[in-house]
Image 1 (cartoon, rainbow, N blue to C red):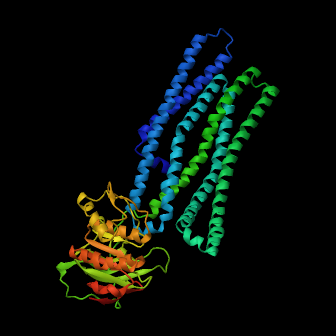
Image 2: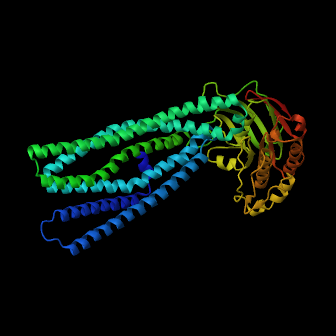
Image 3: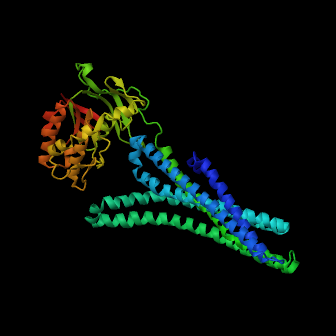
Length: 546
């Protein structure tokens, strides 16, 4: 519940109004029931006019109060979900890229399903508060009619809520297990959608994925869901059994020991029947709270696992005699980026990949080509250079000044980067009019002007082949007009003509405009275009060519 209270922070005034309105709704519900009871047991003259005025006035008040409660809750729901969605999005964008990479499959269900669960809970608050007020109101009325029957009824309701409390502990346990395993299902379904071609073309792989992975994990997840549902149902049925047993016992006491008159018992039974529906609403809310707690745990896990303060980790000097040093005769005023004894290690397993120590200097307007086999650390290095990965040791300098946590966001903003898994956005409205005006030139340069145009600040289409999407990403990058351009094997999936466009048009254009370029490629036939070439192996620089 503490998590839910934190989510509702800032909406306390509206929440107070919703609770008050719901309580008033419950009180009017009780008064209506009381008026019905009084009219049915009226032994004197019945005045239809007075009854009609009073009865329908209370119904009107009930309607107004319930609408006020619903309006307040709708406002709270809108504001809470909106703020939480933006808060989580900001947290994802403001955290360590390494952690986000490891939690991609967990973020989407949190931003969708878990928020929907919270929204449903908030929507139920008026009916629960109204139900609780109705139950309390009728109980007070019962105490007024018969203190003995009021006390007996209160004791039974206390037993019902005690049983509920004990039972929902199991509901909470299985809700958490169900929600935790749901992340695995999301990941497998994501693989099914995005890897459909691979699965369709490989029967054994398809069979294993469907029957050993998806079926197995789905069975585990549905097992917990089944148990959660069973204990929820058991909770509701136990309530019914306790209440029915109680009524049976009261009937025996009335006829055996005459604790109250039969006529009063008929009145009492009518009031109890009016209490059953709101009592069920209140009791069922316990299980809903446990489901929401499971969702909040997932949200808090996202917050706990992801760093709150992204930035360069504590810097310590390291040395390695095998590291190939850089030449000492470079003009310090021309240095743009420098890595000094920089070290990065992936979090997790003891044998996780390690990069470094790395010593590297990059001059302004220069072109650096990074070579090396798969797993040599090329992509890791560029992610460290552009500030996506935070090194554990060493120094990262920009224009001879160390990049620290405070300056990390501004430092990252100097880069335009295309990674192997970069996403193609169609919206370009973050660009200035001057930047957008360059679109026809770059579309023509990359021979995409016959397929795509810019309409209302967006690409007219991104329904393209993978190679064409890569070209369009490049168009987007070029329009951004950043200081430093990084290409992570952009030409890897391009044909010869596209490679020549990149090396003979794009790179010279960037050189002409004074841009710094870092390029990763397995194709060494164009390395003569580079000002500096480094070769990587096992996370270290093992060769240089200037």
